[in-house]
Image (cartoon, rainbow, N blue to C red; front, side):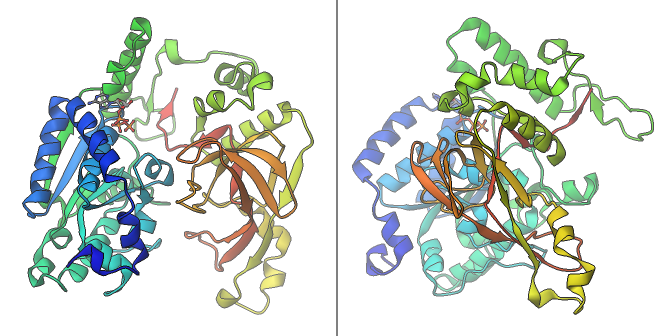
Length: 461
Ligand SMILES: Nc1ncnc2c1ncn2[C@@H]1O[C@H](COP(=O)(O)OP(=O)(O)OP(=O)(O)O)[C@@H](O)[C@H]1O
């Protein structure tokens, strides 16, 4: 089957638009810089691709060990030879680091509410099925953060798609494709609402009986970020900090049981990286992370280099409101239009049982709040994927340039389209996982004022 046969398939046409000469030069440069560990993985993956053996690989490496560099080398090399590579990541913000990267969910049409029998929404004969049949390599970054059911759904779907051109594919992992997963199990595991440690660990790709036994695991251990730091003191501090983070991940830092709790969930932070201000704690954090904020809050480099992470949404709102109050200018308040989805009405009395005022108070992870407060010049972050091609995905950071009634105009500050002016419309969103007896529909701008953000972090004392 030739890629050139199908001139109407948009996905295939996009794959034919790369500048192969440029990519070839880039691949040679990147290839010559690979360290020994990276080279070993690079060669094993290339062998699987060129010998058409297929295979499942996992590249296990902590932050800075050169996974993205390795992906870029593989992608440039194969695309320079007109081969199709699909590069996906579990989050939108990581997808932006991959050349023509997409989120795994949009790239493979993975259902949001996934279970052990799920399949992707890719039908036989579709453009995406044709692209997959012609793909030489799939790279999936940040794999440990996704539930194993998503990988199993992709595996099932690929077998189904590939058996059309190769009947043996139905018995091959990922239908005989070469698939490379990457990430670090010490970082964030799948988020499973209202479930405990056992369910979270069981949701990990390494617990998949159908996939993990077939997976060849490589380890990257050399911190390449440290190699690139010229300043000796900075390098030493970064090395110490990286080691401490690794030790936390490996469970080597002694954990403490707090009163009233059963498990040792707390660790002690070394004094040199701890803020010990006894007064206004929010002010102390903000001053430490954003010194001279009033003069620099429009400076792109200043903003992209820093963030405050909090374990809960309430913390984000508290810090954001504090900072917004410090920034000069008039505040704009955007209120959402909330309603109950008519198809899930549980009774005709819904409007009485769940008045709009009640709907407005509801908050869900990833869903904008009823009320958003913004000022011109303040940094915001997108909470939804709007357009991958324009670099507007969940996690993209922007700076507000104009606040209109129907759109927010803003300048992109992270990702692929830095410097672009974009208009963000209101969108209607629903929480995918809610214990409510109805489906909430909320029409709101998919943005958050963003100096701080939520992360799943350990507890610290
Ligand atoms: N072989 C190499 N030669 C030169 N620089 C490299 C090499 N490998 C990685 N780097 C550089 O080291 C830094 C960290 O690498 P990279 O971003 O690929 O790591 P990572 O494992 O993807 O990290 P993270 O998980 O934090 O995203 C980058 O600046 C990258 O360009």
